[in-house]
Length: 262
Image (cartoon, rainbow, N blue to C red; front, side, top):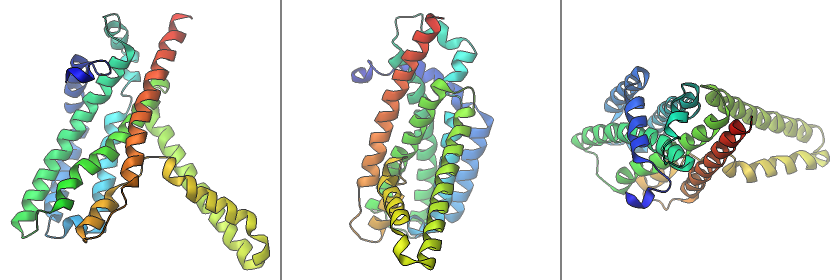
């Protein structure tokens, strides 16, 4: 643990974890996830796309609730200013807040995974590599989103980091639908005039893996079916995780510098 000391303050991490774990909404959502997981955990639960979709959606909601106002609320309450008077770097403080929320995320996911796995195995499921990797693979994805929310929370007030993230997601998908619709209309009218729209569609398809953390659960589905998975979504998520962590630290330093010069 001492190796992470330059980027994570363990007292800040513990304080953030205690603060987050007492949130009634988060406790309620964990109970909902447990009920759904236990009810759906049959021998083929990990291979069911419907089950994976529900689990992924609930995990994303839980992550968003954890990351809501993660950094800004400490400044709004005046706690951050007091803590940063101590011999503590802003990177350590930011890392501690993020790691604290991440530890709650890991604990909740582990609880759901253990319950689901025990129930599934008791019903005849095999304890294979896909089931073992489901937890760490899903955690990397969720933690990457949490890091993005933490970075946004440095510059956005209260829970608006969630609002802006949802707005960006809706705008992205609406743009994709609009461009695909225009492309379909142009192709239907005159196949010789669709070059530009097809170029745009191809460009969007090329950059899409890089615009946000990618859901890596297809890796588990492929392993469950005995195939050879594509590990690139997991690599993208690791890049997003450490990239957002770095950006969050930089933005926090700039925020503090701006506050001191005004």
